[in-house]
Image (cartoon, rainbow, N blue to C red):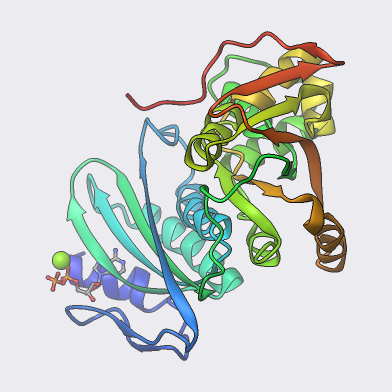
Length: 320
Ligand code: ADP
Ligand code: MG
């Protein structure tokens, strides 16, 4: 199959059609409309075989993760997703692989109503780069830099699951309960972008970030960008039953603090907005857990357990 046929068969034929796209796949560039009063938010994430996913990961999961991690960045900005582009580097044309990959991509595109509007297809090592674009009303984007001392810190979902999932996938850890194992692996391979939380937090949260590299690592981006410090209570970290069933309580806390790939949102809310937050989350039927408080000790992260300092030295995932 030639490059043109791959694009036509696997990507153009399967792509959904949004009303705001004038020209999608097939021309030198895509043309689309941004709604009035909205700003465009753009984000890119690359997934490299052997770095961001294990080489034996299913193409379906790789595609869905590539979409999800990008939509997670849009969620962290409070944006609503609209379009994605895909740059695909493939070692060979494997039609079965492309079929599974493009099906995974299409399912997510349909589910989240995002249109694949273009991309590039080249021969090389297996690398998937997706650029996602979405909208946020003017002046309502959630950033890392607007947190204030006194804000409460919250996270969505549960933390540490994908980290243990990775250790299971790499056979560094054995989880005997099949349901727990399946859950933890699905948290690694099929992350959920918290889009509804992100858009619900507009005008409520002061700052927001998605946890891709681990809680400790990612909260520091907010602390540095906002010139704040934080106290986090490790006993308040939301842990799944599967994680608690599978490892000791101190290991579970360690996964929750250190491990990446959960793609939950961490956000901060002022005292005045807390009531508003509770009603908004309840009406959207989503949950977030209070884990600590911001203060004025710039860049300093203090972890506490039962009102004693919690000793912790490990770092989140770093590429270099
Ligand atoms: P050009 O040579 O002008 O860069 P290409 O031949 O690379 O064009 O791409 C032709 C069309 O197919 C373009 O609209 C491009 O955006 C789209 N395209 C290429 N690869 C992909 C892909 N992997 N997924 C989606 N669209 C793609
Ligand atoms: Mg090209």
